[in-house]
Length: 457
Ligand SMILES: NC(=O)c1ccc[n+]([C@@H]2O[C@H](COP(=O)([O-])OP(=O)(O)OC[C@H]3O[C@@H](n4cnc5c(N)ncnc54)[C@H](OP(=O)(O)O)[C@@H]3O)[C@@H](O)[C@H]2O)c1
Image 1 (cartoon, rainbow, N blue to C red):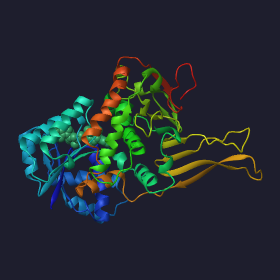
Image 2 (image 1 turned 135 degrees about the horizontal axis):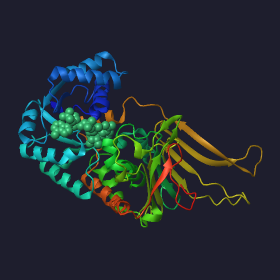
Image 3 (image 1 turned 90 degrees about the vertical axis):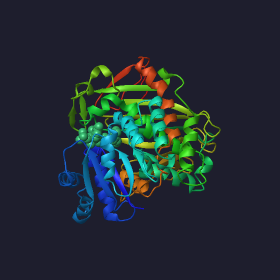
Image 4 (image 1 turned 120 degrees about the vertical axis):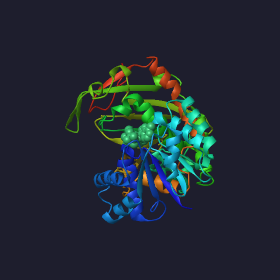
């Protein structure tokens, strides 16, 4: 079946920095997505040649590793149409240029999702068409519902692809292999053996000029509501009988339905905003002084909450999710803390609990264990079994594009997951907006905010 990838928002940062470079890599590798025609749509007064010129520059900047031949083959398949995509008439003309079945990718500001989907619903899409929606999927549960309602009028659920690129990160995929392809892991993967799980995405990167988007989103909406809850779902879900587009999203949705939002917002959540400081030798202004930031919005650059998964497997186990910008150390990992072993033969010194760490960027896996001390048969020493994982040939967006262009939505967020994720975070957003939890300050380059009156982090 011939398809055209129609990128609404074809002149944007996402398209230039992630989508086109991924398409160039797919072109170089061959296979699904490697020869798809691409029609970009934006309000720029560009013809095909002008667009190719813009795309050539973006590829030179963001896909220098792809050989010239593959880049040129992609450029030859690119076209551009000028349209306001919220206008059904203009969007209809633009889609009329797409040969074959369209895969319509909304690479638009998320405020444009609903009017654009409404415009698509007026025009209608041919059988077999797919619709791809970027994140964040609305600003709250009501928004997500409204988006789902229009999407369901447009195409069947399995033809919708809600993007969360974390699902295509190697370490996220490794959760599946680790849990379901190893005899020794799954039997201990429950509350009987696991004491707590930390899902951490601490970054040294600061705002990096993205105030336009970030200042109205904040860390909770940008990271926890989608990416980190998806990681929680992969860690906590029941074993799927298959990895396909009905089973995997359904197992993840079951977990999200069982997540109880933070019980006590003052105790179970933490929010902060960085002040001026130095990160890796780079002097940074405070977030409130960054260009484009409105300090009165009180946008958080650090967000943390602890939830439980109220199902028979996980009852009582805290899952702590946290993320922050401008922190002193990059720490991106899922850390599974096991309960301590009884340690009876090692009287006087209880063994430290085992910890399994799945690390992101650089990807790796580490298992912290107790072994006998060198030369002393009765003492214990801590050892780390560590394996770095090699870089992959395709970045996350490349994997997602390859899958969706092959018509497979297994790595998409489902309608139910999108709405459940908002259900979990809405009480936190409401409590923060009402000032029930203080917005703490932390210097850029530090380890993040500490709870008032404690050294807790
Ligand atoms: N950038 C990233 O790193 C990144 C990462 C993950 C997710 N995302 C998500 O990806 C989406 C796009 O982000 P972005 O950073 O690429 O935004 P952006 O740089 O602001 O680009 C927005 C694009 O949408 C187009 N557009 C907006 N309104 C339009 C309209 N009415 N008719 C036609 N075109 C319209 C713009 O075209 P004009 O030239 O006509 O203005 C531009 O091409 C957002 O949902 C964002 O949250 C972005």
